[in-house]
Length: 426
Length: 107
Image 1 (cartoon, rainbow over the protein chains, first blue to last red):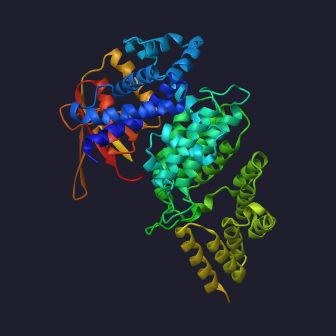
Image 2: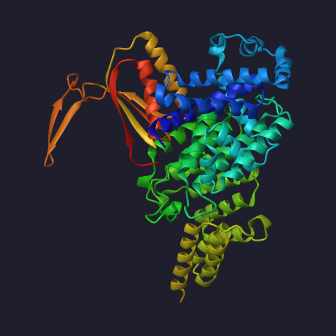
């Protein structure tokens, strides 16, 4: 790609969310807003390499997109009626300036970027009428400014599949007439949960790639972190948003320590803590304090962040406060009663009060259908069995765990542990 | 990718510039781009070492062209993005000189 094109794309990725959001407020259709913004990007790719990047690239893209919007509305009577129907809107003055044929686009320039527009866009892109994978793709596209090709690469999916997913998601939003708004108070907790879920899904796909040869895809973690920080800036009064940011900052701090030289995963307790990124840890602590200072009962993300903070505070694995972590998992189990949380509690209890207690809790989970093909249950059991000296059972569990994971790097580690258990057999 | 942006020469800021700079930093912090910023005391100590033998010279270093006045540590997705951020900074800071360097380490 020529250098000038890369510069245009850099501007695009910084500006696209605000541009699409601003346009969506005007045309009340996220899909159309994105089309218009894309047309402006194409124009920029054509003009900037010769003319240079304008002093206010965001404003340039917005003005160009608005010109396209005016053209489009003039050509399309139906669209015009839709927009006219919105005449009663508080922003009628602005729409008149944009769609009434007024050449004075500057009249509305001051109001082009309303921070809340990006928040609205996030809520719409993560609307529960869409499937989780559609929400993820649409969020990366509309707010992250990623191209379809980049999203496809990050998720090891074919580009046409992602393109289809985005087209269908936009169509669904239009058909269901999802309003471009921050949801009313009654819907807000559920809708916010949906946004946070999408951000954390993106993060986790990067942090522990569920499939493929690489165990992590840091660029996805980075996108999620950025989305989270942006969300925290837009809705500072929501403790769970800060909780999620804290969780992601602290987990990201271990990025360099959790991969061995051959790309193999290194478990938390065996990591070189000197490689943990103290800047991200401090940011995580700050976000967690902010969440706790809002004085509301701790939700799932705040609790998970508090657990991550316990690990971050321990200078060595041996100094970990496992009793505190076990207590936090118990609280987490009350707000998020899932077998995976229970399994993590089993690990913490085993570390705090001995492998026999941990194994007991893990064994109680064996009947859970959700965990039947989850490789971490046999991994946890194998760890406890090895500590209890039951090497043969341990080896069998490691082998089973290896057969269940879809990640190659992780499989190799588990098979190595199975072999180690065999060597310890009497 | 992290980039360290440093300023080695800058015109004296007026009130308007200070306000605009405050807004820019706030906006970029909220966007998750700026990780840390700071201004540096010019009366530092120069450390010079030859074979482990250290010589100290007290500042100020106002004469030295390479002395860093202020810095911003930013998270960017590419070098081009970091350059675009610098462009924004200098649109507010107007006249001066600085550097953009990638920080090795966390991607």
